[in-house]
Length: 291
Ligand SMILES: Nc1ncnc2c1ncn2[C@@H]1O[C@H](COP(=O)(O)OP(=O)(O)OP(=O)(O)O)[C@@H](O)[C@H]1O
Ligand SMILES: [Mg+2]
Image (cartoon, rainbow, N blue to C red; front, side, top):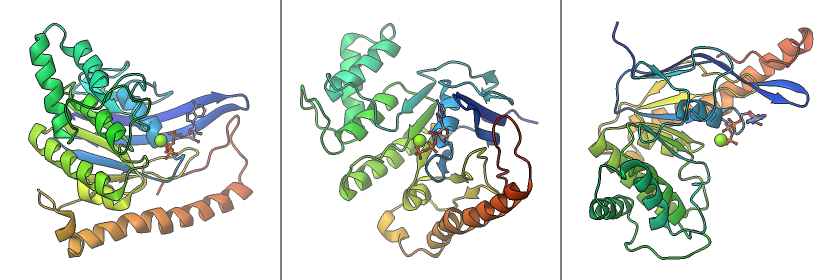
């Protein structure tokens, strides 16, 4: 059988806490067969989405299970430019401009392979991809409007990653129009570069609009991947206005909403009934969470 592009097998993640180990993830499996797929992870707050992403990024090591294997190699350290991360709060350095933030990453990766002028053009190109004005405003302590989100994406893209990992890239205080522009830019960029994207989101419409596949996570502790992945079979390029009343789009949206707000609730009440009659497993209490 052909090897997967990216695979997590039976991943468990236990965090040490003063009260003993806390099992955040239990038996998480994720398989991406080939590059170029846009996969979203969706689930309630605290279920373990960032933990999964950080394992793929190599920022966390799974406590048990097969860990993360990318193109046949085990991931055990952060790996730009192969994997680049857009963090939950963009994590740009506030004492630098957006341009300088991107420059720092580009210098780190392409110091030897690009001339100074090539690097400059490359930074400008990536900022333009996310509709950032160039030269960008300088010296700000904060990044206004969508600048932080756009800058975080530009910085990650500028490393030419084969896997782009995005933790709620549009989750900050973005107005609806800026968010829509950035989502459209991201779709265009991903179509052009054909890199693999794993994106965490809380937003059902964002997940359906952008993804080829949506992976729904059950609530933690001991979160896992719940049930079947949802394959989004909508032609690209996608237009949000045209899709708003497309029957397939509406169906996918319903599926995700139903998982988040109905199936999850049923699972939780089932688990709490089971939990009240079962002895908790020492040392950390676990709740079965398979769908
Ligand atoms: N370093 C840590 N030590 C102890 N517990 C942790 C640690 N990191 C995460 N957790 C716990 O693991 C669980 C999963 O956290 P995680 O940040 O992955 O959730 P999330 O789904 O990304 O949440 P959100 O949607 O709010 O960002 C949470 O209960 C969190 O409190
Ligand atoms: Mg998170």
